[in-house]
Amino acid sequence: MLLLTLHICLVVVFSIRILLRDDLEATSRLAWFVILIIFPYFGAGLYWLFGENNIGQAISKKYHAIFDEMRRNSPQLISTKQQNESQIDLPYRAAFAYATSINGFHTLPDNRAELMPDADQARARLLNDVEQAQHNIDILYYIWLADHTGINLANALIRAAKRGVTCRVMVDGLGSRQFVRSSYWQQMQAAGVQLAIAFPIDHPLKTIITGRLDLRNHRKITLIDNKIVYCGSQNCADPEFLVKARFAPWVDILLRFEGAVARQMQLLFTSDWLVATGKTALDDLPSGKDSISDKDSIATQISTNTSGFAAQVVGDGPTERKDSCPQLFVTLFHSAQHEIALSTPYFVPDHTTIEAICAAAWRGVKVSLIFPQRNDSWVVSAASRSHYRRLLQAGIAIYEFKNGLLHAKTLTIDGKVSYIGSTNLDLRSFNLNYENNILLQDSELTAAIYQRQQDYIAQSIAITQQQVEQWSVLRRIWQNIVATIGPIL
Image 1 (cartoon, rainbow, N blue to C red):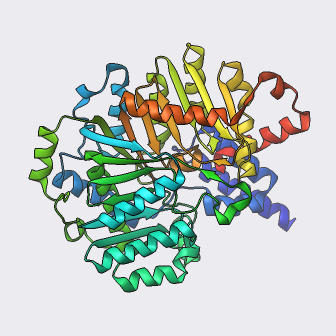
Image 2 (image 1 turned 60 degrees about the horizontal axis):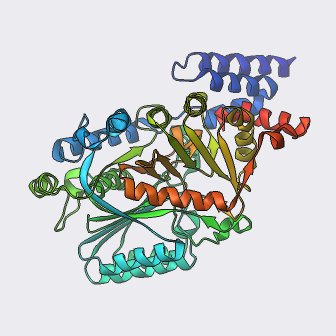
Image 3 (image 1 turned 45 degrees about the horizontal axis):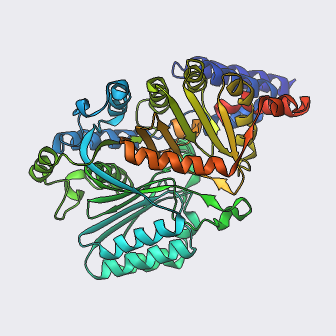
């Protein structure tokens, strides 16, 4: 009788809490009800730990205060409305304007970029830029491993700090927990590299009580002298990815940008740095020849340089407007006139995103989706495949990459627009992780990214409607069960 009463109380109390949440989608609400009814004790504990995107009022206020200050101090880079929209072709202006609404980074001209040929050359080029740095280096990674890539970068930063370059390094407390405990972290600190940990996990109980343990900083940013920024899916780790070696190699994409988007990315990095260190924006804006605090210099460069392409940074996270990330993808899909090509390792989108990508295919847009054949998450693998039948019925081409774990997050539209960075098409990236991306319009660079996507397709198998129809009943049931609880994963 006591257990039955406890069962009923748990279900009723948590159900009322779920019903009171206006921000919760119907699918998520239903998923929580299913878990609570079938597994009341487990479900109640799960909801208490992971049910609400509570990052803590103090952190949320800090982020909003920092962005307000940056909008006042650097209106050429970040403001409350879109600017320079005439540089974007008419079909895509709504998407760029929506991206601006997320945190204020608007379209800027005079950007240039190179797509790195492969992982080895990407790492070599990045290390060379670090070695050539004259003023400051800012780095943020979700995962930093003590392998060849991680050690080489740590040593390069130590050398840079010793020759007088201001070096700031930040890593996520969970993704880089092993590196933070290594001797290389201590060696960087001893050499004068400034270090910070985003969302540390050394006091997990406090984090659980005041916020949420699995809210992470998933960004991947490398900034050199406020002029160069590397953006893409690549963490600070070898392709062999020792922590999950059986899925190796991890196949990533990385671009080297120069221009105004580097200064926007500098602001995004600074927002994370200030929150992690507890410093104030006025005390900690970077200095140097091309400092973002030099507003007159920036204004002159933006107004006089018209070469290069138009682009803007998109920084998303749990302190931004809810669902802004999937809504941006939906807007981008709606803007497509001829073709969409997308690669992502984790495909567990919400209902609206699935609807938008199917709608694009139904109206005649050629849509290609590229996923890894073997995923490091069995949950994601099952949930992703639960959508295959519907995607194929809409005429969407689905490819599964065979040669390792395809970790590249790429989106190209009509051979003109690209969206590149750290965001996956899953609910974790949509609402839980801090992400960084660059949205751009440039036919030449988009063609290079599109060709890389075609290279992925050449190393993939095409999934057909016939193959999906031959899946066993048990497999289909299992995939749909996982997809049902997908909104809470």
